[in-house]
Image (cartoon, rainbow, N blue to C red; front, side):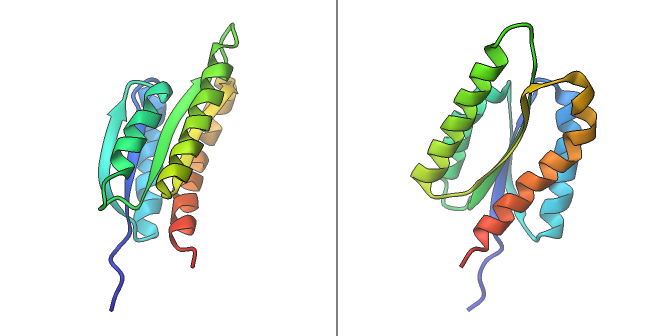
Length: 138
């Protein structure tokens, strides 16, 4: 009996959309190379909205894992750092609770503007590869 093609969802943040578009294209390319079907693609306002969306999507039987793409820049206060830590913690909790892998392609928190462009593709690609590897664990 042949296994079905693994399906993932991609949750992308529309805040910093021009950067996230680059990440999304890279993620889709690697997903195709790894024979992952993108079952759902959902845009949310920002990184803070990703955990709830991930939880809802990962409850669907036809979704085996997810990738989240976002960017949390360094600001003048610690808001981004605190928010980033909360978001990552929530994502880890969802992954463990639902027993489905989540590849985190969130740049930051505290990333500087000069650090963004060189990391866009790699973070997205690494997030997809992480999900693919976890889905193929025996």
